[in-house]
Length: 118
Image (cartoon, rainbow, N blue to C red; front, side, top):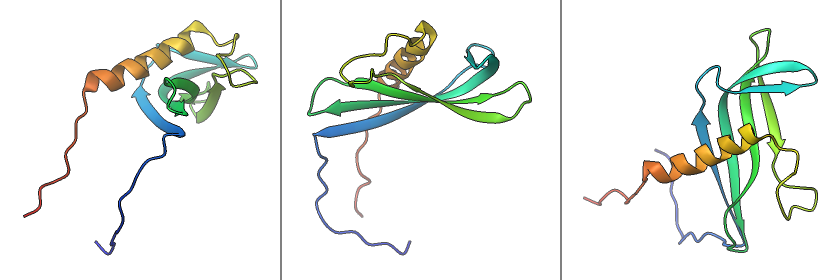
């Protein structure tokens, strides 16, 4: 590998963000836009912790297939216009996707330690 690195990285707590991707079982979520149905097969949920506050879901990016079989991306903003709370018109099924992604991140129980030096 032709890369070197120096420094002592520190994350900024002002706006920490994570994205959690989950695969959806085919046929379990249909998204409808302008009268056209799309079968969602993947969701990438973005969470943020602004100013070290509790985690908030900001948006979901869906990968879905349209009636023609072509893949499309659909994004749902979860925060209201003032960004101080959830949008009132987000369907319950999308909130379930958010909950599934948050739960799966905790259930996986990821722990990590850097590889030991020989």
